[in-house]
Amino acid sequence: MEDKRPTRQEALELLHQYNESDSLRKHAYAVEGVMRYLGRKRGEDEEKWGIIGLIHDLDYEKFPDQHCTQTGEILRQHGWPEEYIRAAVSHGWGICSDLMPQTPLEKVLYAIDELTGLVVTTALIRPSKSVLDVQVKSVKNKWKDKRFAAGVDRSVIEKGAEMLQVGLDELIDDTIKGMQEVAEAIGLRGNPT
Ligand SMILES: [Fe+2]
Ligand SMILES: [Fe+2]
Image 1 (spheres, protein in one colour):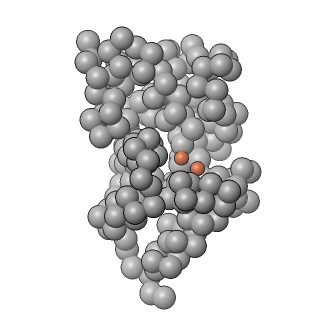
Image 2 (cartoon, rainbow, N blue to C red):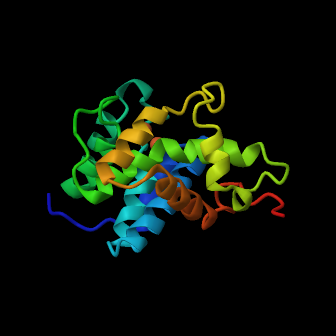
Image 3 (cartoon, rainbow, N blue to C red):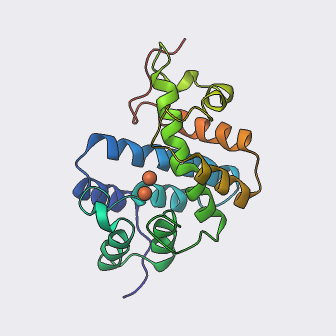
């Protein structure tokens, strides 16, 4: 099958087709926002980075037990380029995939996926419920509190930062900024102060 370049519209249609849950869609938009922000910051192909962010968890709602693997299958059936498939599947390295993140895009996706969840929870405990008010130190304060956003595996984020050779503060700052750009779409505009 020839490799065509997927458009954001195609990615969005697949996302909506496979994910009916509002929270999964919002997670996809959040990861897309951060991938776009960081792709742009690094002088890379922002569109490609964003699209991969959008579809990285494509299979999660319908095939939770085959997470990552099914995303690969679905994208392949739709003729997506292997580069996109590899990147999406490698986000689950060590959890649902044995593809280790290798390119900057793959490492960034791996590092920020869980972190977006921590930023969401940090925004939601603020009176304003706004991601526009979230600061790096508020996220850092909750790092060791295991009951806070208990599903977020901090060690994955730390491993990702290490792979990228960026400090945790910078990674958190970039993640917050990327999510702020899509505050409306992820339901976290709230009432900023
Ligand atoms: Fe995932
Ligand atoms: Fe994810």
